[in-house]
Length: 184
Image: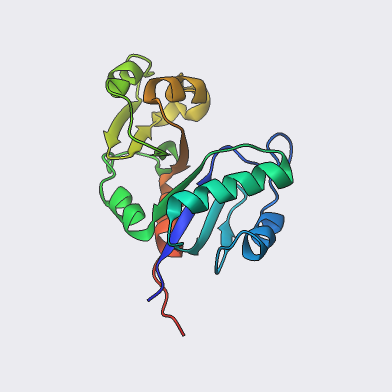
């Protein structure tokens, strides 16, 4: 069985600011990026590949490649299939009304002490958060991300580490896409 993982880029787009075209990125990563069996999922920086021997080195290499080729310096956060399965299983908000309003923010490192308390003070009516390991789960409620005071700057400052969020539907899909494959 070949283990698979997701390398998650933060805040990239196919047009406008932080432009990183996924087809070009796939080609680069398959070529000189050293990753095997590279695929991407939607245009928001979800790279699926065979798990490299050293995830930290792979993340640093992908970050450098994206900066060199596209002029975008963005954190790259890795999660193995097992870590994605655990995140999905430990989702603290199974009762949320809308899957697209529940996000898992995958953190690069451990959250700073007191981060949840700082963020709780900024919650809007209907919002809730929970830190589960290295995932900060956010239920944006009916208001959605656009009306939240939990901006990237606020989250970064409180958490003390970079993170990138994916909605619950995307988390489910990443679990499926990273399922181990049978080697030929």
